[in-house]
Amino acid sequence: MLERPLRYLAIALSLIIAIGFTLFALEDIDRASQNSAQRVSGYAATNPSPAGERTRERRHGRPREIIDDVNDVLLSPFAGVTANDSSGWARRGVPALLGLLVYGFGLGYLARFMTARGAARPRTLRRRTA
Picture (tube, rainbow, N blue to C red):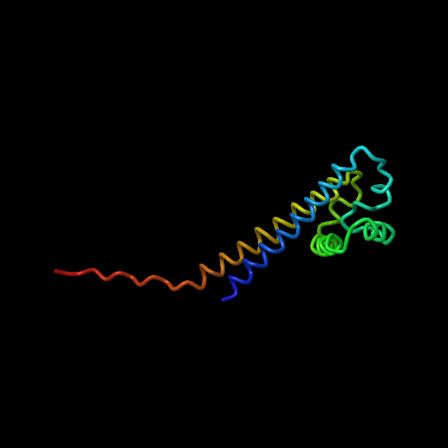
């Protein structure tokens, strides 16, 4: 009964995380030749500083900012793992990978487990005696 909503939730959260990381990667690749001053100010962090958040809001449109905000909330439990890393790719990639493992694989596994537990057990076959 609860397995189908859990499966859909796992897929939706995984898609949000994947889209957020893909948008970050495309933007970072696009500006690879530019100055890295924005990354130093906390722009590319999973949990950006208030100044980094305002910079990101000005730079992105409303739909992208919604995706980034949801991504920040989903990945905030994992942001501390790479908080001191100097690489923007590590600060975004490792929490995204951990989020996909926990939300995608973990919730998907839980949904499959619930399906298996809720399934009716097959009846034991009776032997025919002749």
